[in-house]
Image 1 (cartoon, rainbow, N blue to C red):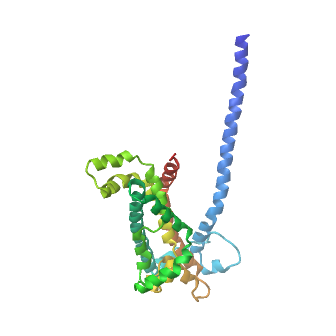
Image 2: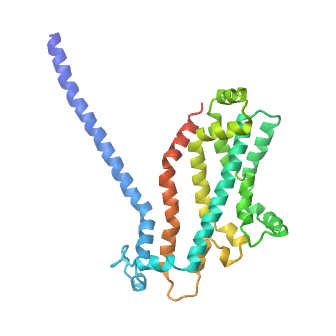
Image 3: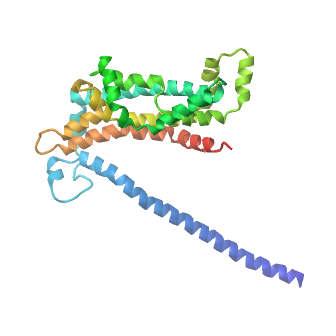
Length: 298
């Protein structure tokens, strides 16, 4: 009787396991299907932009809606990249973004190191005051900043956009780096100090290499924010020779040319978006790793 019972139980278990695996496979397939459908909504603007950049003026002005051109006009990109204003605007965007990234990442990492790894009197009060600046809207500081940069003679230069990053602007980014640095063992600093290392050496040789995922995340945030920055250049630069890509595309759209050269505007937009996609794909692994490690702090 015992043998017969075991046989019945085993025959009943196998179908239940099979059904469970089938349900799991169905849920997985349904999940990927839903994610694939949703991804089409996010990809639609990109496909529309690329397709329009390869169309002729006649195709753009026709009433029918077609995502892709009848014949790809790659000459739209060739005509664009040979224009001096486009090359100058692209170069300006690269220079401004590179300076902001270098200055901001260096300064906020030093501040985050001081808040997380060094012991000094009043650290908690200063940190609370810094976090309190998050309550101040950026619009409230536009006029005082403009007056300051005007008195310094920095208008119509890159200084109002590039130099503030060297003074640790961005409390939210400092907080992100500080939280990541708190997850690192304190024994690393103590061992380095016992060997005669200075705080700067500990920051550069020990903390910074271990904070690579968090640094990559901060870099992505800064790059996207500065590469798409339209407000500050429109306020401070005031000269076409200094305009970055966002202002260049805006002035292309506001030109008095009839019909509006949408194929050139979209081609410039595609060229403008490409660095963002490249940076994201190169740093997405570090981005996910930073979020996971920061969230694991107990």
